[in-house]
Length: 313
Image 1 (cartoon, rainbow, N blue to C red):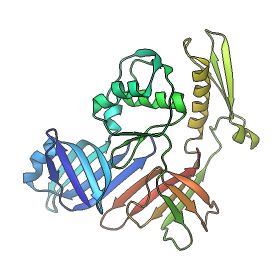
Image 2 (image 1 turned 45 degrees about the vertical axis):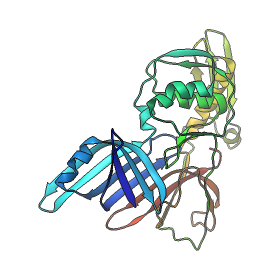
Image 3 (image 1 turned 180 degrees about the horizontal axis):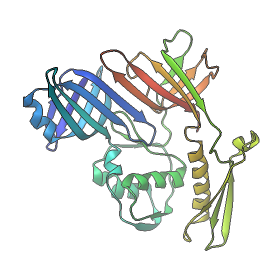
Image 4 (image 1 turned 90 degrees about the vertical axis):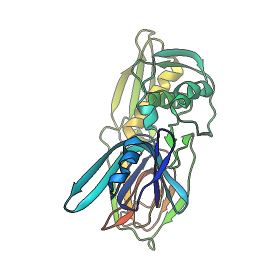
């Protein structure tokens, strides 16, 4: 694996062989993150001090691009080591606050030009269709929240970043991976919960005297009974009210089903990949989306942990 730090002028510094590392990836939030540890020499200090970006490649393919958040140097009788931490490029949007605004006909290009491109995100891949929409940005929202809300209310999708730093908009599936009885799996954990999942969301605009009810049909048919009432501002339109209810239900389902698998292969899966799971000892065979993954290596072991979720959730 090759890892590089880049300073504010774009000058690159190649890191020595890593003695420990961990790359975490998600399909939205929390933000992707990295941690790398390597043997340190005093001559490396200027490169660490000035580093603002991090990139990594494995077998010629980019596996991480991100922002350097901090580093730590330790010197003792055991030797000298440095640890660098950081996040994926979503950090550039999370760390920048947008000003309050109201648009009567906002387009995707307008939102990208105002709230994404100015913060250094220039590589965007969109496969979704968007019509212009009325859109309100509240004071204190991050640029990430702006693009996240615009995509959700406009098309019901969430933004995410690919391992090589491309902002992905719309459902873009990666590799389909098959795991069966012949696949080496070192650990499997399945978690499922019903608590907190909404069976319906009542969205009310008290000022306008309107309301809409969004029902989680599948959960309600399985005996689910959990209702929430959500009040929205006066200027919220009917379509946005319904999207708010759908969002509340979707958020309530987050992490309600998680199947974690750990395999010895490095970078075996990324968010957006699809896993066909067969002959599993948990009994939960089926086809799943990869929601999160983490690739790790240290002196004792190496591998990839993937968190699977039900398709479409």
